[in-house]
Image 1 (cartoon, one colour):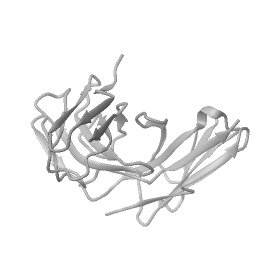
Image 2: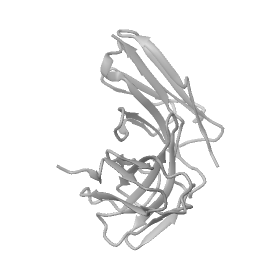
Image 3: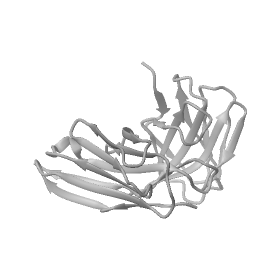
Image 4: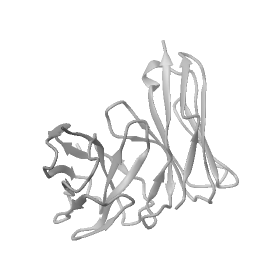
Length: 112
Length: 114
């Protein structure tokens, strides 16, 4: 089945720094979703991307749908302590029919 | 408020016992999903249902069972056949029957088997 590889696996940064993480696939995706999971909670959708080359912002978050359709990037500007959590990318495709496949996540830790 | 609820938040069971996790949604979504999350790992699909009275196995269905008698409800039973049931379980739903629709998640249930 298709796999999504996220990097880095974890990041420990200082408050105020910008953050960049990415997600790559060996197959073409037509949709990219970015979720954030707070500790002990369910993931919450941050940004959805539907078109190659698309650049979408949500407050301090910006995500891009790669031109090759095999990657996506998420950037967080001026990080704050509440940005702590696990960030997942997701896209359609996988072993079980055409369900969403999730990346392994990037764990972000922010030092005040 | 519209949303997905899971109960309980924390659940403890003895080894060998079956346990059922609740998931309810009032979003009028057709599709519902169950995922398992282990520490430091991503989400793995257990079962999904695209319509009432129908469900399909996901990537790791062994040791689990589900039912979908009502559109709003998709309970998951962790049976004694599941060899390593301790995990964080997440329920999700999406509007359409296409599995590629955006999924919205519940708050999760942390199951610990003693």
